[in-house]
Amino acid sequence: MAAKDVRFSTDARTRMLRGVDILAAAIEGIVKVPGGLRVDLKRSDDGTPVSLEVDEVIAANPDKVEQAKTNPKAVGWFVGQVMKSSGGKASPQAVNEILKSKLGL
Image (tube, rainbow, N blue to C red; front, side, top):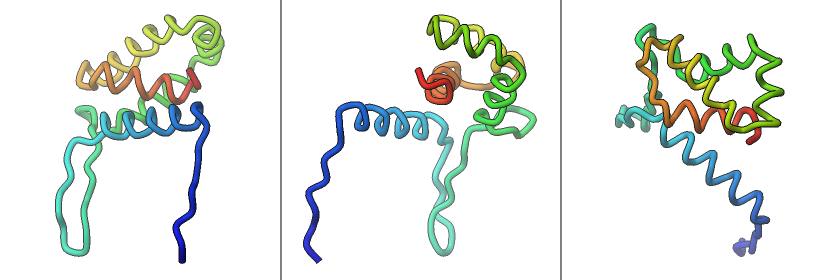
């Protein structure tokens, strides 16, 4: 089978790369296990993946979501809430990237 020439728009490439960056920021380690690899995601002290904490903060604050969509600087408020819920254990940079992706910014 011959290889196909696949082209993506600039917007699609940007979104894919942002997704790769988010995933890379969330990975704590990759461990070789029998049959393949295991990817460990960063977690807060209580064992919750950071992305789940982000989801909880977003779901609890729909009014703030609308504010963040009109004013992207408002994402900082969400970062603070996730940091609070994680006890300061989450990476602010990872939280910021996850938030931007989930909010479509």
